Amino acid sequence: MKDTMDFLNNKTGNFVPEVAIVLGSGLGELADEFCDMAIPYSEIPNFIKSGVHGHKGRLVFAKIDGKNIVMMQGRNHYYEGHSMQEITYPIKVFKELGVKTIILTNAAGAVNETFKPADLMIITDHINHMGSNPLIGPNDEHFGERFPDMSEVYKKDLVELAKKCAKELKIDIQTGVYWANSGPSYETPAEINMIRQLGGDAVGMSTVPEAIVANYCGLNVLGISCITNAASSANGNKLSHEEVIEAANNAKVKFKSLILNILKNL
Figure (tube, rainbow, N blue to C red):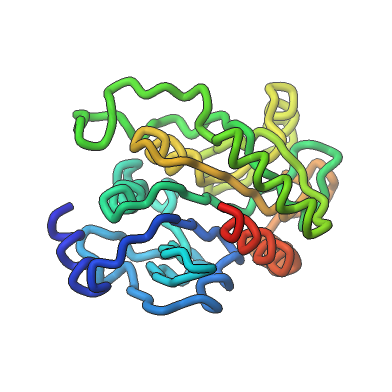
């Protein structure tokens, strides 16, 4: 961590961000528009280089609405073969940088049958079905306690703020529970039926490990999913990553305006 922090502070002139944003598949345009400095993950000590199409793999520093912001333009995933600790390392770095609030975004498949592609869903809770937890292993009390409470991972006041900001922009917003699977295969129709019956509204392959670690580190968490498809082949259609990127692109204008309005009102 000292190597990482020394490198970043030297590069950014001790830039202290108050908000971090993790930008998921197809949602990285915000970081292209607002970029005072961008550092590829491959240059940052102890960061993993991003290897997923649609993820640029850069840490972007910017000032938006008078607030210091750091953005992850793309993330690393458990399904790439990295450990849970490796993919959540940047969240601990954000805590060290001084971040207080983190906005986690992703592309997710609809499980709730009222959702349609390009909808935005504010995450109210999650179900971790990835088969692991990023807090397994020795605990570092500097970051958080051994057994963190998880009763309000996604802060209710931030959920309400996001709903209010969406209403101001006349964006129809969904709310729901995000179900995380390890991936990289998409879900079978039987799995989608199970997820629906067990309370999931959208399903994806990220975000939950980051949310667990952010909550553990004492950060205020807001989660937003871009609904990219009807989950699985339950609708008779085959799924592809290209479809995910396309739907995210269709949603990016309202996604960007919502994020900017949230930042303005934080």
